[in-house]
Amino acid sequence: MTREQYLDLLRNADNPDSGEYPPGFDREGAEKKFIKLAGKVEELLATKCFSETGVYIQDASFHGEIVVPREFWNADGDGIFIRVSNFGGFATVGCYSAEVPEKHLSLLIPVLEEMGYVYIPENILYELYTGGLPFREQGASWWLRYFDYL
Image (cartoon, rainbow, N blue to C red; front, side, top):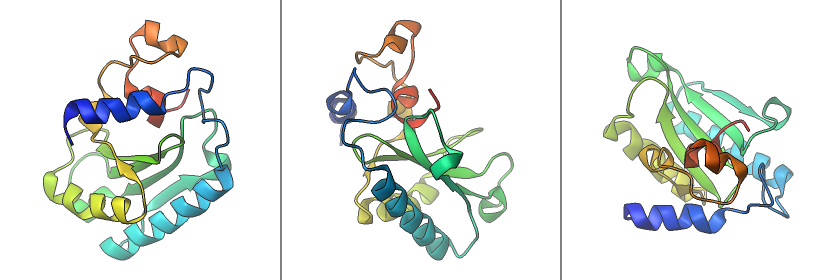
């Protein structure tokens, strides 16, 4: 997908009347799907990951996060994470302290797609938010719109 195609997906999923989740969002169903995703990631990597969903994530535009421990990747810094948005079936893979190596993305993206998520590259999410919510005026990114605490 091109940069512009990703941005079109993000713009089309935006709803200026809904900050945390779109109208009709099935939180329970989304959380069940997320729990299955977490199990598939742990099975694929044969390692225990840290997962959060449900009451542990509130006031946010996402509903689930999986953190693969840095020890698994033999890396310094933070582990690699997967976040799942409340909008558009979007999911992303990132790392707080570095860019995620392509070899790790090539393992994780197929699992996301198999589960029906739409993978959005982290670098696209750091582009300027151009939607209709008020934080646009503060120079927010698409990351805040779909994958962060509000």
